[in-house]
Image 1 (tube, one colour):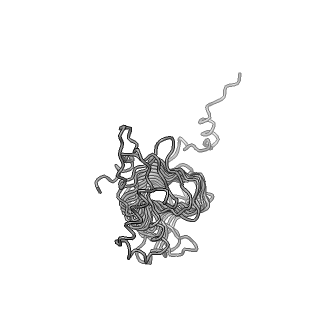
Image 2 (cartoon, rainbow, N blue to C red):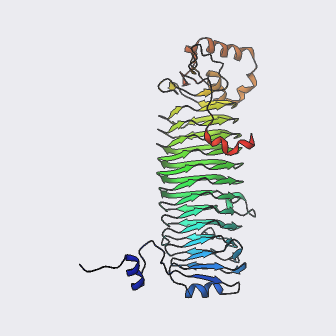
Image 3 (cartoon, helix red, strand yellow):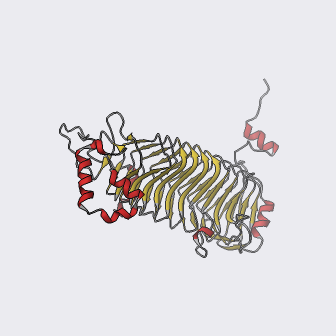
Length: 427
């Protein structure tokens, strides 16, 4: 039998490495801090080599068109001087790490970014960088299987919020993973459009319009993130089969979670607290699974509108919201399953047999709620004897109620989701 050398040796002898592997002979280049040094070193480097930048600032933009690693070692800064994208990745297998990136251009049309990943940039890795004051932080523009992890991204403050760029913009980039980043300022933390099979996990978002903004992005995941003080936490729009699990929304202004034309998704184990308007808002959203979520201290715990139907609501906790539920319907919609419902902090229920399930059903809305939603001026009559009589009559004779949500098996005790541990220090 003829002896065949190992694949790695064949590769070495032929000058080729197996696909996806760094060549064993890859070199490390020390790049001095002077004008043109990065371009000069790139011209000499081979595929798989690493360029380590000396401390200091490097001016100008850069294109990475083949598999190399650019390492700022935590003390190098690349400044694009306000022209275009600072780093553009067009080749496969590129890694950019431990680098500070500043000074992108200001064109929304060109999507000027700190780091731009084009559709030919297969499996790039953007790791542990600091991106400051760029129009967009990272633009994943068609690059499949991208990884953006451990970066600190701070957008601009010199424009109206809607005129700024996003921290991470994902367009038509299947398999993109955005994990463990700290994103602040700018417009949206992560904006994804026309993509699929993406995972946005363990990121922190502050001082933004939306923490995560989904448009036409099916079969994806938003998990383990923290949104603090944004206009809106997690907006899933025109998408199917999205997992929104284990996230935190703390003191977001409008909504913690919003589903707009979002269907067949799982919203589970999220902790939403202190949204001035609504903890959760559903607009024409169908067949979604809401379970094990905590909705606390919002204007409305959950608001259903525009025909949202077929949604499963089990094991959630509604705690201290001004209105627990806003749901207008002429028929009853059951919010319990197999003898288990949800927890309601304003329900004075009793549990004689001690099984943890209240012995009477809970109905969060009555006919006066329906009147107030359709005729806000009627709030002036809230304290009148007539209104109090109507409400007492409905509580005594439930058959008078107009329809809406009924929880036939309310829980006596709430179960706080694991996600709450992320912000326990905030009370």
